[in-house]
Image (cartoon, rainbow, N blue to C red; front, top):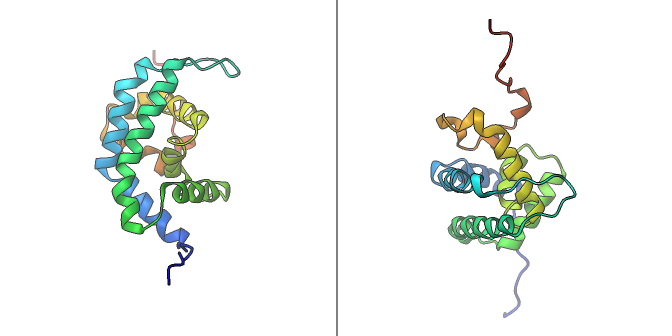
Length: 155
């Protein structure tokens, strides 16, 4: 028959595979390189202010990188990019523990999510950029538990 069957996906399975994919050094290397190269060019504006065009250019670059990374992965599991994104958004809405990893994908499809990601990266880079732990830091999910470096009181 020539009818296309609806793709049924085991969400948990896909998310688990995604977690593995996103915490792989190859992938985090791309994200890290992107952030390191472009963080300085990213203009942080106050909430409600208009984002400058250069930020949108970075967003398009990021989108391209993520999509290239995802292409192989998606053809392996046999779902499309849109399917993956809606799956991520749904999972994130349910407070899935993997949602930190999903942010990478959502940031490649929603401009405001990308801006948020850059903010987050900006805030954590002082903790992570000089260590190898950066790989998938957002997949750890316990950023709140990080103690900020205590700058004062060190007489």
